[in-house]
Length: 507
Image (cartoon, rainbow, N blue to C red; front, top):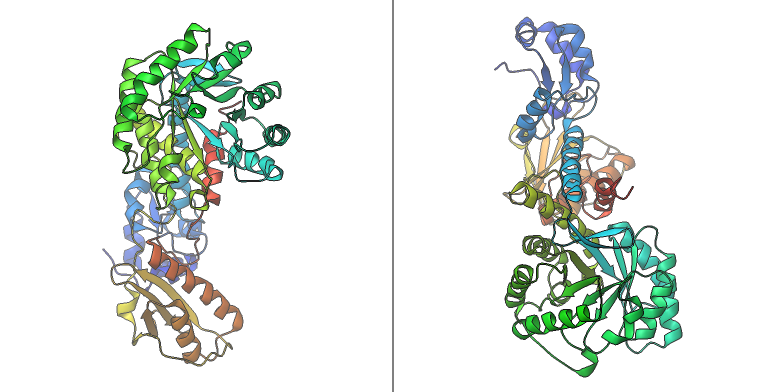
């Protein structure tokens, strides 16, 4: 180990390193002994300039040191790193490509029970198809938008939810609007009115919810061509059942439908809400899967996600894993309430992860994709810059004068263990910070920096405000913070992820 005359590697440039290597023979001699040289991903500039000095390939490694083993492994497998950008982006792409390959294998190994439109319905998952139902509370004018939105989130089937009290003409318009909003997704209709379902079939719907003892004779003309989700009893008759009584009743309804010649049936055992029989209903899925091996079955998540006041992401993830374990063919989700927003993409990614994990015989971790929206797998890292400061200033809630004027240079970090934001000011050309501020409030730290540095420019003050606020969000949510890099909080990247993984599967 040779100590370099650099205070903080994040402030180093490729030109600085080149100058150091050229002027310290010991460093130059050591580097020439290696086949490949990796430089911290934090270094600014093109590190290819170092190759002229040491005559060895030079690449940028990762910003996060914990990724070094993966980086080296990637190189040993024949991968190529960048001389201009950190390894994180390349490693992420490599993981994604590996996941896509694994998921394609899962999809190609499907054992279909039958097809609905272009979709093959697996007799037992994985893979597991995803259906999303439009809220019954939205106006007809919004149905097309929701249908397109759900397909964009990864739903292979979009179900039009029909309000019970809605008149026939409005319901038919609702179905038509949904059909117009779809590209490749299969259209389905969920209604207690046979005429609405029949109209849906005429408009191209391939699936209906739900077939029960009270309406089996109503759809005989469609019994071979169209698919039906089967429920145990007639809801219009006021029949109620639990997990224990529902399974025998469902078997009877399936047998009756079969006797009438229905060929495409999907069983729905109905998942009970939390704390009211959820576990027992999961057990009924297991029993059905083993006892009725010739009929695919569906698991609807809404009774759990909508009837549990917690963030939907974890609920949808664990339910997806359970759906894969019990062999569900189809999962149904809805976004009826605002808290369930993005349930479709949450479930889609979770189902893909669980499907690949099931194939590999492992838990759904380190698969190449994740559904970590508000948290990271690792905490933010500190460079030790706080300890190198000539002066350390703890920033609390004192009132400070707000004057945006001119600027200095600041390095920002987050320490999750102590719950602090750290902001260190470097004077021009300095290798160690002049002063470090730390505290929990981005606003208070910004005020203090502005007060102590009257030369701070408005542009840099604005930049500091953004970065400090990102640091505070990271502190509050557990997200990993790296200065000048996005926190990746939100769903935009997850929507793109769905498109990336599914690209080419429907071709």
